[in-house]
Length: 289
Ligand SMILES: Cc1cc2nc3c(=O)[nH]c(=O)nc-3n(C[C@H](O)[C@H](O)[C@H](O)COP(=O)(O)OP(=O)(O)OC[C@H]3O[C@@H](n4cnc5c(N)ncnc54)[C@H](O)[C@@H]3O)c2cc1C
Image (cartoon, rainbow, N blue to C red; front, side):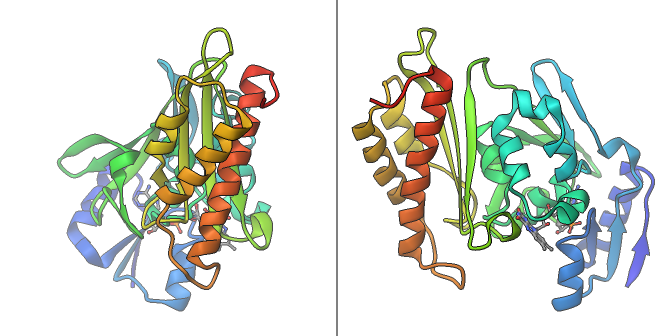
């Protein structure tokens, strides 16, 4: 196996072009090193950790830009993320152990494209964009089209994710991420649900509701029928119950070693209900009637 440490995005892209499907990018290595140990070694390992421009969190024109090399711990401890993007902050604080969060990067979590990846449903409901660099130029790809299947993304073998562009939600919008796993944060999510709710000006109705479902399909999913059911309405216990049941039908889980498909649907229903109750209360100051 050949090993490279490019110092610029251009050098990294040249290496990816030259080595094609043989090449593997490594950032924090928490997924790649496990693959090398238990699956296979790539022909060329391209370590991007020495490219300084790829890390950091900045606010720019109504968006937060998070560099691909920013660690999950940096996001978890960012006051800016906690204030402006609570749904992403909530997911990062429930991510693995402190040791893993200190090393794992958001770019690695995204490019791994695992349906259970903790940051993915928050990015979907935030309607964020992946900024991708290729040898022939840069492009912005919405996360709704970025994920193409387990382990497959629009970055492909020759692209580099450089940063994530996240529009800051309207003031008053609230978000939560709820994870169900056998060993809590130490385990990969059996189901993850991200909910964002923006109230109307009078805090009487949900002006916008976005729901992201993780680990219940080949990619992280939105629940568009459930969102449509809730938009423009005051959330009542009966409506939330109906929404939970509808969200379960929008999931397409599989049975695997972590859970049966049927159990995953029940968890989607329960977490969606809980997420709606919590965001409604936080956004309007009212209990669910
Ligand atoms: C003990 C343990 C617990 C874990 N718990 C969780 C958990 O609770 N939740 C969770 O979501 N994940 C978890 N993971 C998985 C892993 O930590 C995350 O997916 C992590 O975010 C990967 O980031 P990394 O920087 O380590 O990526 P790496 O391992 O370096 O790379 C991951 C993938 O992304 C590609 N890649 C990385 N950066 C880029 C880039 N900028 N451009 C293009 N491709 C890139 C790599 O080629 C590789 O395919 C766990 C892993 C371990 C070992």
